[in-house]
Length: 273
Image (cartoon, rainbow, N blue to C red):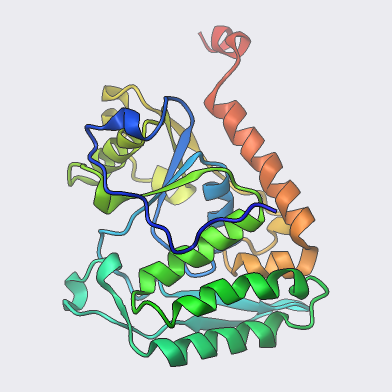
């Protein structure tokens, strides 16, 4: 089982040091840290060679940076929010990495209790219970919401066998305009392509990517099997419903499809030409 260090942080590097990150090629995903993310989000990160944690943009209370939606094992329509109470020192201007857990010890206990309540009866719970303790322990050593949220995602990626690397946008140089920023961050990672979710594709300006000779690959999760409710509830639901092996296989198959789409065969290039 692949394990990842939840407490480590990639050393700060500038965008100009592109070769320090990657020898070239591969896909990068850029996404905010999410607390026990939805399977659709986890699938996008799993399909990428690099996850650039978008930690220097404005914190949004109505997003998934400090919360996740739990669903009952026997009824995925029976749902409840699990939230980490979060204080914003700079008000609405607070960026994600500066958001603070209001009561860390209490929040850690509440998080552990709710996950046990929802998923403790699953036959797959024992395979995850001890691993989750690593995330719960972080509430005792940090007051940063983003640290806990990122760690919860890294934990799940590691359990599922992801072999990629984590970088942070706050460590990389990028221009401010939205699409320019995504292109610059992709370039800084050393990757040749950006893996973009369906929401991002609706606003993405491809020109900054063309200027840097970067490919854009659209990511879309299936809507059947393990992917049921993948856009709505935490990936923990699928893990506890179907088990690690089934989810691991589903993510691996989707990642292989994304890799093939980002590196078309010579025959497909000829057909397109």
